[in-house]
Amino acid sequence: MPKIVGLTGGIASGKSTVSGIWSDHDVTIIDADKIAREVVQPGKPAYWLIKRTFGTGVLHQDGTLNRRELGKLVFSNPGHRTVLNRITHPFIIFSMLSRLFVAVFIKWKTIVVLDTPLLFESGTLLPFCAAIVVVSCDPEQQLERMLKRDAHLGMTEDEANRRLASQIPLAEKARRATYVINNTGEMDQLRENAVHVLDRLKPSKAGEFAFRGLVLVGIAKIVFRLSQR
Ligand SMILES: CC(C)(COP(=O)(O)OP(=O)(O)OC[C@H]1O[C@@H](n2cnc3c(N)ncnc32)[C@H](O)[C@@H]1O)[C@@H](O)C(=O)NCCC(=O)NCCS
Ligand SMILES: Nc1ncnc2c1ncn2[C@@H]1O[C@H](COP(=O)(O)OP(=O)(O)OP(=O)(O)O)[C@@H](O)[C@H]1O
Image 1 (tube, rainbow, N blue to C red):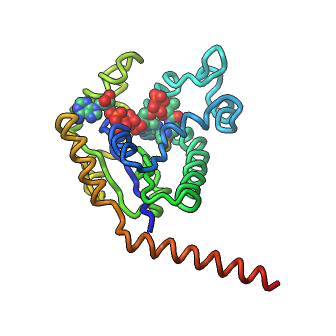
Image 2 (cartoon, rainbow, N blue to C red):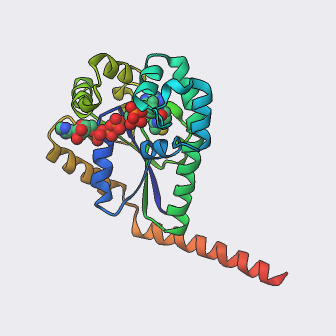
Image 3 (cartoon, helix red, strand yellow):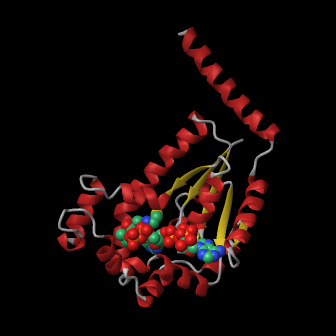
């Protein structure tokens, strides 16, 4: 049957890099961070709830969300973070599940990946995942890579450390994973490790045909019953 895979890790541990590598191998990626940006566009319900809750101080002059200001607020105050999660997560999850349905039942994709940084923290999508893959590296590497990547945003070491502290430690996530992709080395090594794990995730051809056969038989039964009315 098509395989639904949860891809997670810690902040800046390399999830997006791995999903980029996998999407070159015809894998469908449903990216929670990308969807999280879509659901807070001006005019969307989550946008209005954020504006009403946190005020215009978290908006730019043109009305769009000031992610830096909101980030500073929620990563220095767990209460505010919980409130933001309660506002945004239902919309993010609804959008991810709709896309998952289309990928599995309409596009007939063999592997669908839920790229979700907070897979363990939130827990909602865990029951959908046949396998969980954690991209792992050392906390020092997370910090260093985050500071380098977000230097243009003026991210300070203090802010970066607060973001790290807001998540379940990577080592704990790795313990709960079905597969761990080690990202403590160079990019080439990460590419090799990511492809190796992808090979192990591929469902068998027999299982895939059996699943599709069962779905087709189910549809045929429904059509037959409807035609008897
Ligand atoms: C606070 C916000 C505005 C900061 O935006 P910013 O552009 O600086 O960061 P971005 O969204 O690119 O997230 C970067 C990483 O931060 C981490 N992160 C984001 N939100 C959270 C959170 N609520 N709790 C813990 N870590 C988080 C994730 O590892 C994510 O990959 C934004 O992250 C947000 O709206 N978060 C709430 C929605 C959410 O939980 N998103 C994560 C995907 S479900
Ligand atoms: N093995 C590596 N060596 C050097 N840099 C790396 C390596 N892997 C990833 N990076 C870099 O580290 C940064 C973080 O990687 P990436 O964006 O893939 O992480 P992420 O887990 O998706 O982060 P986030 O949770 O913040 O979205 C990126 O700039 C990426 O290019």
